[in-house]
Length: 392
Image 1 (cartoon, rainbow, N blue to C red):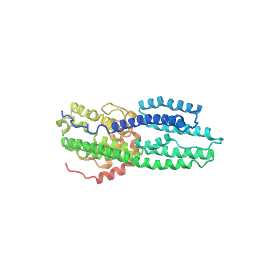
Image 2: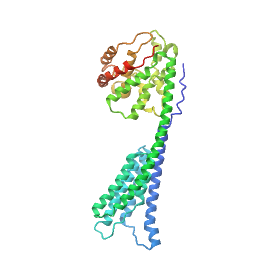
Image 3: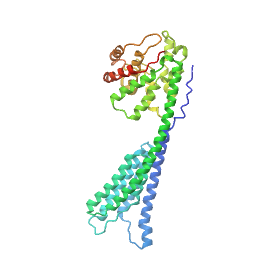
Image 4: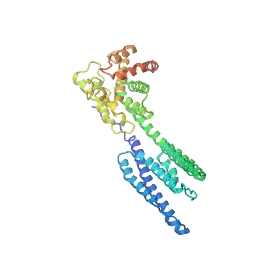
């Protein structure tokens, strides 16, 4: 039997690398947050009063603030351990902003003291926000900080808040410039990985088509039909559709491991030979497991020959046990198989293939997806008619 010797190591790691870097960024963020918070208060309450003979007291509310801030730490570490690191930065920013807002209101409301603004930790939040390559977080920090000062200005009836607002906007512009630069670098990395993945996918398909010329174009058409149907359903992101497209293109990759005399046999297969053919979904899934950019599509490769009634293979799954995207691929795969010529038969007319899919509603195919197929069929028909068919 042929061995699938394609090396996927070149594309392993895009998501892993980005995830690892994000984790490092969150950990760095936490360290810097506590260092700057403590350092700012040490300078404000201890060093500067000593140097300039100022009288500044560390009040009860300051102790409460530190209790709250350090109580967040074990929560943050637990979230990082659970892989939910993306929300840690929001927790710190929102908690700190609310605490400082309450502190300022308690300190200045109804007091004769003039409002004094300026907080190194707020500048820290704005300037460090670009390291997460997340425009949502950047906007939350900038808008949230400005909104906090506007609330203070209204409650304290003072215009002294405009100076820090202008300062925050200036630093916000600087942070936005860094954010765009960092985003550009990340897009470059992602594009590089995607191009590697595309090249490998094309190489695998070319290898498969050399081994079995009767499958030439089949993977490409199945992917096109499946994407049309997935877009008709309208619940998938661009990233999910991209991964789905790769999975569809590689749905028959396991056939590389099938002996040539079985794969290209023009006569009807024996029961033993058919059992060997039925191993290709599991073999394909095994060959591609762990490949970044495809991990969410492995189930498509593994289960695209399952049937709604449980009579498919390799696991005889039934109904909604079959992954949703695999159910979509199943319809696309069957339609293209019927409408493509083979050595032992001519292609069926499109309307006949359409009727076969409809007749399989609730037995071979997901009944709800067949209804979506009916809506998408005109686009399938248009694609089929415009496809550049290659004579075998």
